[in-house]
Length: 95
Image 1 (cartoon, rainbow, N blue to C red):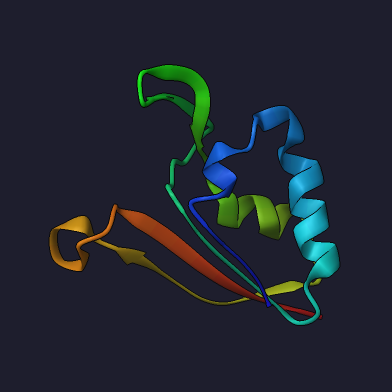
Image 2 (cartoon, one colour):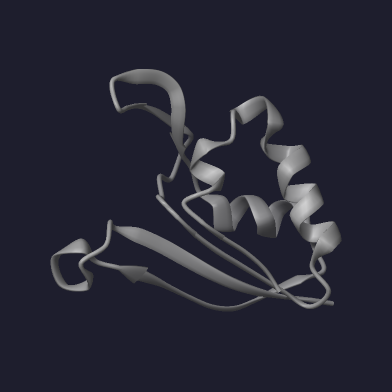
């Protein structure tokens, strides 16, 4: 399994495709991503600096780029009850 949690949000958009390709390459069976979600690419200020935090539909990006992935499940961690940030997660199985 290849797993990210709050990692893809810090990848500069110009490097995101190469990053997803590498995650897909090294995963033997499953990919789990837990990241901040936005239906469209969005850059936010992070700790007072620009260019360090990017929301996106990471699940959709995986599905569009890799037709061999099957969405097994997805969900949402709600900060109000989980104690962690609002994060959407996706679990994919290869092949």
